[in-house]
Length: 314
Image (cartoon, rainbow, N blue to C red; front, side, top):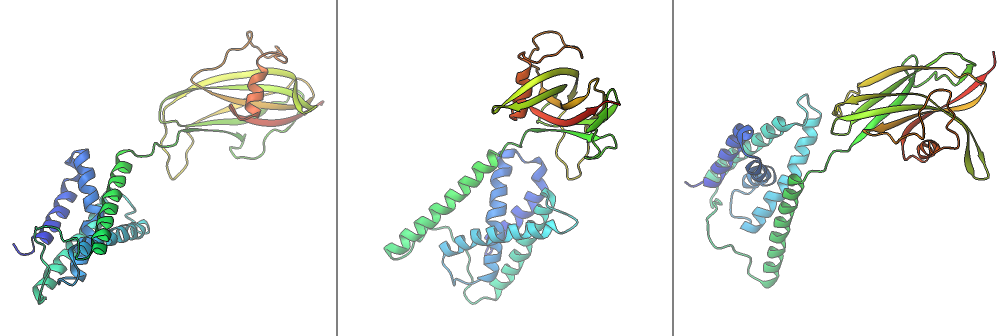
């Protein structure tokens, strides 16, 4: 079979595309690397150089180089089409390149005076010592690049784990927050949580009312009351192009005394540190270990949201 190499390219391209869903993971990775990083460049190189105008090492190097150049460009083009970048679109488009250029290369070889047809023989590293050294460096670089790619594919970067925690005004927008109130006036905010932690999480939200000042370079908490706490268990929600809320709660509160306050919304995952004693709205936790919650929230050690509220007499 004269053009066994190009016929092999055709067979691999068609069969790999058809059988991708039933292949084992390791075999899929091995064939996928060969399919992406060598076959497109080899078929194009065979089309551009049907004769023995370049040696085997140059042909192999061009095959890798053209593949690395063509496949990202193909992905860029797909990104601006209705098909987008996904497994099926990449497989079909790369297979199309392999098939089209392999068929064209076969026809060009038939019309060539001295066509290139690979033979399995001892690898020619070049005539001079310099050529042999350069060829060896090239081969080592190719092997290293392929090994690095296999490692990256086999050990993918773990997705980022985080929780979205937000408050909105009563109209559902990031505005019109209740920052100025009368004594005992009812105020409303929307508290929202979205779980991107890659696992199920039991969340607890604590709402604290604090009156504080900054004196001599440190924060003084003069009054500290636990207004409320509530919890919810949420499953992991994958990231999507279109943002959607996962869990929201309308939270109502009021403040009984005039003054300037900070309302802290603290978010805990799975466990909540204990309080020094049982809480209710009348217990002032100022001067207790509960202050550490507020200080940690200010330092960013606890995920939190802060609402500044000024309360005046009617």
